[in-house]
Length: 357
Ligand code: FAQ
Image 1 (cartoon, helix red, strand yellow):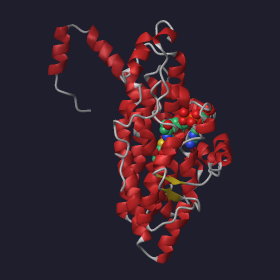
Image 2 (cartoon, helix red, strand yellow):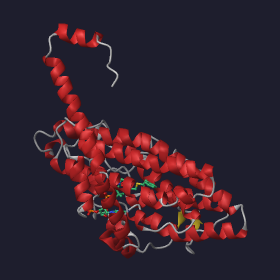
Image 3 (cartoon, rainbow, N blue to C red):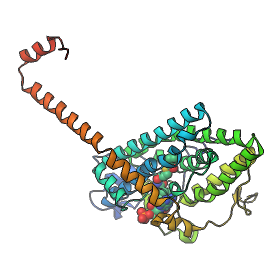
Image 4 (cartoon, helix red, strand yellow):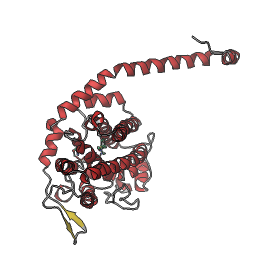
């Protein structure tokens, strides 16, 4: 019914063709050979400059989404309805911080500094996912984020485990395992509400009504049919970064989620949602992409609040970064001093019992 194993590893996807040998820029033959053979590009490999730049853009945006994504749920840690729910929510929010960490580390392998990426986020030059600009008004929003937002994240990210850039692909494996856990806990939290009192069921339905369309927007604008040439998809697929179009993944998400909503006893807020026997997929209504673009532009309900909170957290954490740097420098000096000592001196130091201050 739910899980992250709905994209079989052998699913071919619809990758755009890599250029023929004759068209390959000199020096990039190995890059294209590795991409064609479905191998992994590693940090020291030669790669096209626009591949590097596009990966930095995508991985940084992804990392920023993980850390900003801690805010809507973090706001409910102190208000979770039981100690068990509080412990689960704390673990989940902490996981998101960890995902940010893996992703910033993956971006750094492309030669960019993490501090520079955070600067770009704080000055609005880099984005984060639109979904985190919506408020969490009730406890049911927390279950709904787990079910729908983490559910959408998994559908989008499982194919990234096979992305052509090694450090990103490897980071995504662990991220997806944890997201799968997150999605299940969200489903379970909502299941409890929909099988509780009428007021609890109503709260769950209200949350799903508010989060459904923004969750569909998470996959990005249309990039198939008439929109096939727009955005980054075609290039990204030729590079083996994206494996499916935004529209294909969105369809997968709807197909996966509609029966789950039925199991929960909830109605998805789309009168056009119905199973299409001929296509073997659910049909669904038109998405209002003007809302997505407005949110991306900074005009969503919580953009200003999220950014203000992030900048404040960064400033308040300055002393931690300074302390960590001072400690690292002290350790490096100690190490350098040790290397300058003779082996006899080093041995004598090892044997000296530690002084108790
Ligand atoms: N929000 O041509 P495309 C999570 C932009 S993590 C904001 O399709 P692309 C876990 C896009 O950047 C959620 N901007 O672009 C969690 C581009 O702008 P540009 C984050 C968006 O890169 C759960 C323009 O529109 N996940 O949820 C959005 O090929 C709970 C054209 O779009 C990832 O980042 C959007 N929704 O495809 C955490 C996954 N959609 O650069 C906490 C990795 C599109 O031209 C709590 N990223 N844009 O100015 C991706 O898969 C891709 O980057 C896409 C966009 C699919 C997001």
